[in-house]
Image (cartoon, rainbow, N blue to C red; front, side, top):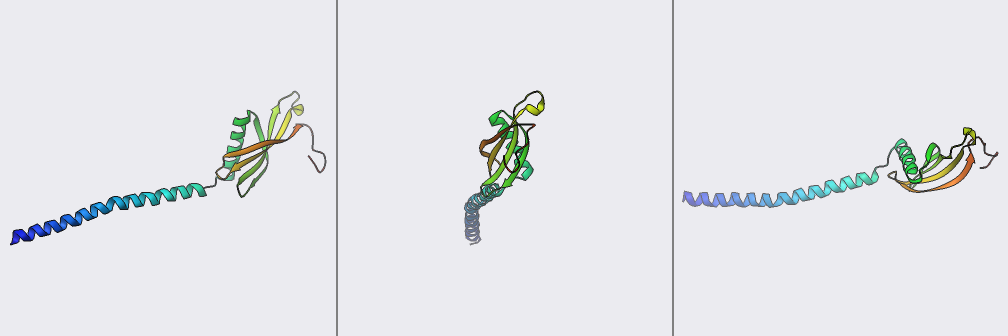
Length: 134
């Protein structure tokens, strides 16, 4: 009798362990999915800091154009990301005041990756803009 009792108890505890074992992989898989969804959501929500965006924009523009960015003359956050105007040295001349400069309009996505650029103006370094215009 006691042997029969032990057998049924051991079967019950084995079934309980098997049930727990089969649930663990499902729980682990569910936890991993939840964790990866959180990471993706956090990455999508991550907007770089303004200084990080400025550095990325200058570096990416220099890499694409081969030109040397000297300054950022305008910078704003938009719905789609960031918009900047970057002053670059297009052609060095002597004296330096005669060097050829250009303004490039640069657009970046929300993560700070360059999505487009175009030259909007060329000028000599020593020339001032006419009053009220470019």
